[in-house]
Image (tube, rainbow, N blue to C red; front, side, top):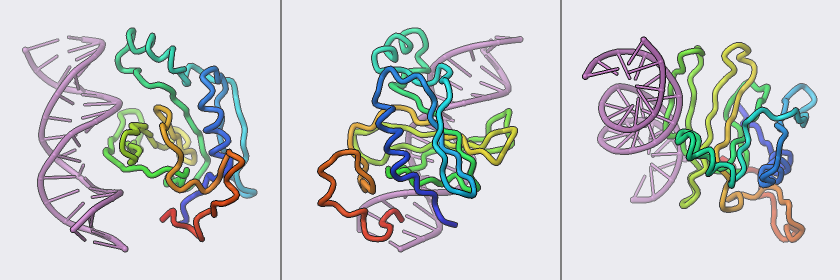
Amino acid sequence: MDPINFGKAYNAIIDDISNPYLDILNFLELNEDGFREGSVPLPPVVVSPEKSEDVAKKNKKMKMEGRIVFVTKSEVEIMDDGFKWRKYGKKMVKNSPNPRNYYKCSSGGCGVKKRVERDNEDSRYVITTYDGVHNHESPFVPYYHHSDASTLQPSSSSTTT
DNA sequence: CGTCTTTGACCGGCGC
DNA sequence: GCGCCGGTCAAAGACG
């Protein structure tokens, strides 16, 4: 099966992620026509770097520097978002018949984590949670949000495995 | 041979 | 203190 390529839309959202005052939830919905971008008012999901310290003091479990939740309507949960992830765990959660997968960014020094699971009630949806902000660009950089990208090529075909 | 998955073990927090 | 629960580790294997 073909991995989904978030591509440009994802990078656009990454731009938003770097905004510490982001208060909306971005999502992509995959339908017959392709991806549809959207946003809804955000529940307490994204924590700014400053706020995260406060939160961390109150709740050590939430020491993330930013948390983004994607809800994607998709058959497969393997999504190529331009970063390289190494799976480090899988768990069955009590409330859901679906397993939860844990990934870590495989770039050294970048401890961004990612959690992927299916909606426990509507398994057509994949919930992807990103914890943290990358301290580096995408290793593949298939799309660019900087203007000097003209010299680069979207990596012939797909190096994205 | 290096890299990444798989999988059970392990661990810390929390409620009882 | 004990057991549940969610998150992580790490050894072994798969895979290129």
